[in-house]
Image 1 (cartoon, rainbow, N blue to C red):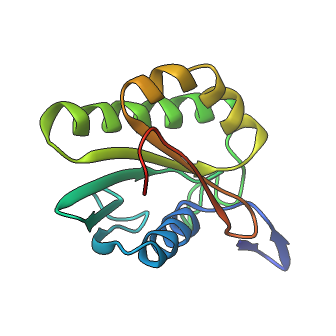
Image 2 (image 1 turned 90 degrees about the vertical axis):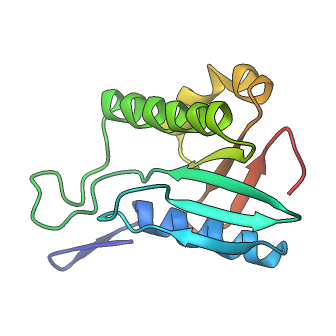
Length: 147
């Protein structure tokens, strides 16, 4: 949740997406090897279970970087497209360069669902899982493999 002045919005941030997915993975027996915040570089989540890594790229619903012009504002459709495209590209790179499983983690909202629905079949064929995080921080997983 973003605090903006005195008002609060339920826009889910990237850090909230990462936190929710990490909690879900830990409850399913994963060890979190790496966890990045929105200000850090690298993979957002690297988890390990049964001798295999799971690498996840996460995105939020809007800008959570204090001091930016878009702080606290949800992404428009073009920005959602760009963020989903970048997450998918990073997941494809994981699949191409390693034996790790790849996933993307996104807010469970209409703009993100609309973008992913258009490529859902290709994501499954490519072995990429999608972690959907709602405003209550519940996680739903749509993946071609078992957690």
